[in-house]
Length: 482
Image 1 (cartoon, rainbow, N blue to C red):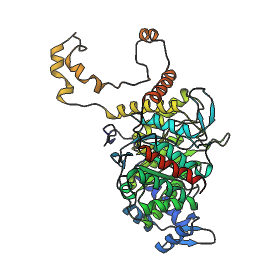
Image 2 (cartoon, one colour; image 1 turned 120 degrees about the vertical axis):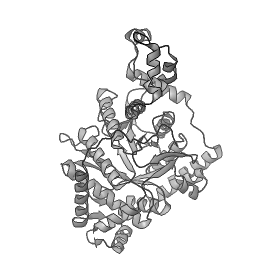
Image 3 (cartoon, rainbow, N blue to C red; image 1 turned 180 degrees about the vertical axis):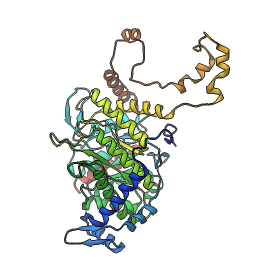
Image 4 (cartoon, rainbow, N blue to C red; image 1 turned 30 degrees about the horizontal axis):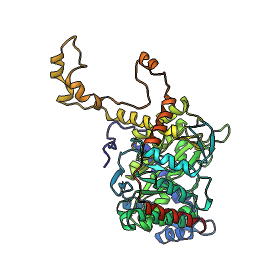
């Protein structure tokens, strides 16, 4: 297990009281029973009907009784251990363990070399994956671009290949439909050695979405079904904006999102009780001036923390959102929004927190922003670690030895402990003004750009066997004509 991924037992951010959480839960149960959800899959409707839900095939509306929600919550597992690509345990997902990663799937990238926005290509996904593989505080990888230079019918598989060949870390991925998903799982099983080994030590997690409000389309439901049948971890997550796809009040928007999560969980657990399911998702607000789906607003941060609170209430692994900004450049706004969101998600105890490097309301990703988020995560982890209180750290004997008016700088105790006690960051500046002037006066963004280039030149991800890479590529290329 990774030593830098520790459970955040203290401090915690308690956004909602127990009563407020229970009120949100009860309201969600009422909506599921009274209003229902639209299920655009005859298989899923039949499954729910057989279990006792009230179905209406003329409208595709299904009303789900609370007992089915209770049953699903009782069978769902509380923790998922994700492995790395080599099958070694890597992340314990659940409880208050918080991990941070990228993605997913923006149409544009901000080219660090030119400073210009352009369409994402496959090499951008490969490059970002290599970068993340070399960053200590990025724990998992999710595709940082909707690739535009490959056939669209196989684009998700090309993204999957680009990640797989350029990082050893766990991979979160999307697919077009059930067939696309099955092909990605086949590739992952090839890397693991067999489907059974992949199921025992999963290094992949699939991502699928219902459509707010309260609508579940056939493709994501087919993906949900496939993952449940094959014991592949799945994130089934809504992404709604208060005032558009949900009520303008955050409480009402959270209820809509929670209903969508719970409906997915019920279907998933009816298919295969105990199959790994990850709860969570995005609740943000609409920008009322131009209709943008915002990523950097306080309402978004609060909505995400409310989702984490409900996830803890249900004892489910939680998918979170942070490290994103509405800014279109790596500026002060980007730093402020990324910092606040990362801190709040860590304090809320969300588990898999994605979107490090997101910009421009989810339209652009940026390598430099990923490195900036890596720095922020290191800072947040240090804040949450606090400090050790023990005879060694109280240092009473050391204080007695140095005495009033002395200096601790050259004491053995200082050399023994300073690397552990003091966080040393790569890009943030702590030096004196004189030293900063002497070394050229580089600013934060220049240091970030330099670090991106250094990692991409020097870091070499652990390679897969060449013959295995060739087999994977043939499978991906074959999907273009499938």
